[in-house]
Length: 359
Ligand SMILES: *Cc1c(COP(=O)(O)O)cnc(C)c1O
Image 1 (cartoon, rainbow, N blue to C red):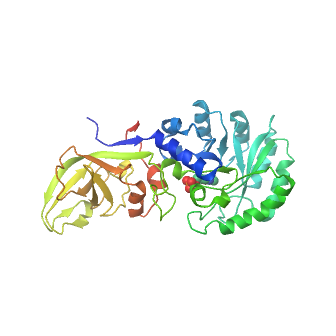
Image 2 (tube, protein in one colour):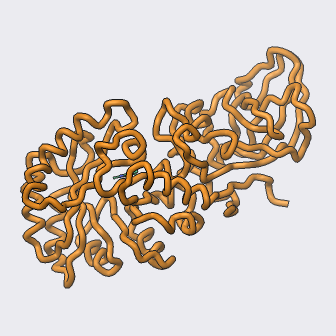
Image 3 (cartoon, rainbow, N blue to C red):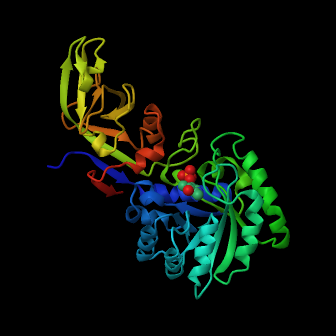
């Protein structure tokens, strides 16, 4: 028998969360599926994506994969091209390309495409990662508008702080001031600014298209609001089982480094899940784990293949008892928060060795 660990992907949850993004924003939704669908697997979640208005990603092989799966609606390449040849591929696969730097304008021009492609022109509104500064944004826009390789141009930015209460205020001011002169000339120009946090919390940034990622997978983009409070459903669960029980005495230690010492006599269950499965090694004692339907806590250091939990006083725990590491009952965000990271990282880190089933 294989190790009892298994991940489950809930395509209905993805469909629900996409609908939620559409309803809360009233905008069209680019379901963001970069990093292999935030670790869920593009092929596995594909059924759940069907009502999205478009798919956003950044690897060209992922764009090819969704076209091969039969996706005919728009595809947005969030980082645009990495070299000139990428624009030929964009033309072949009918991709919408972000343009965030002057080099990309040059490559697009050099590609001399037989048919124009649609463009998302990205502004740096304060994150200082990628995008044209507000002062040169209008020039970049006019340059693109004059090129035969360019079809529809959409105005775009990305927020650094949309998870905070007034987190988009400054960026929106920059975006609106630089784009309003362009809007005057072309009132039907489309705009796209919102990630999940802005989709859920900042209506002034919704515009025509939103680009939710984490919320599609049922993760909360906020530190102060749970996914359940946002009416989102978990799209991934990670489950395993108890493979051994240890009855230990007060003063006995558990695991590598003897980091946990029992304050009293305890029962410890050993679970077949470790950091080589994608469980965070930095999860501390106290991180929530569900054992036989009862919420309890991790104790000691997470090993490569196993972790230990406190099952003292929990009835009927034995070898084979089911364990949920995250999913329907234990929010992935709770495990992430305990481990001083974010749900995004845990999803993306689900290890290849974990078998996955689709619910
Ligand atoms: C990843 C990404 C998103 C989605 O962000 P979430 O926080 O996961 O909603 C949206 N836009 C861009 C440009 C991105 O890179």
